[in-house]
Image (cartoon, rainbow, N blue to C red; front, side, top):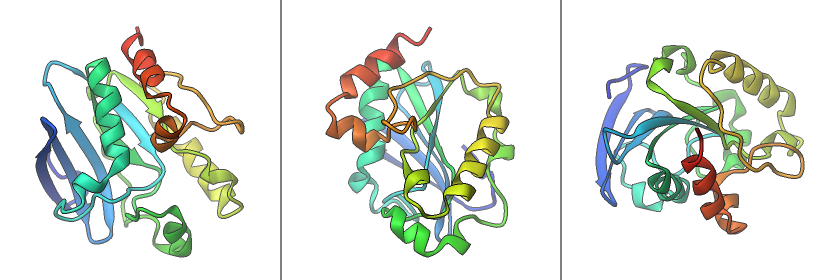
Length: 187
């Protein structure tokens, strides 16, 4: 993969997957995890980047990316992760504390070649209901859904509030097998 926002593109291998991402200063613009070139690409929309940034020294610590590899392996899908906001921090509260720095100068959404993605899932969690920047989060969700609207969405289990469950919740609630089954039976 090549740079979409003039950042640095990194690549590491982990668990038999090639993981490629673009970072620039405190931002991570996208992350592509590829197991098999023959598999279809799944667009995954998350909230903000976690442990993986920079040169990848924290790749093995990124639980969310590991969970995505696990469920997508069972469904023969290569996940491509973008985030509502590019500020890279494992703690969403740190993003809220640095809200003015939530995005780089340019956003990645309009730089994507949408024809490369066969399916789309939302997994950004319930942060719009934290009472912090709720309106701006909902505005970004609406914008992203408009931009990505041509990609067929796979409907996954939701939180009680109706928001998409985050992969960490999939693990905590022991529904990774259910998620993998839904992804596998997507057609």
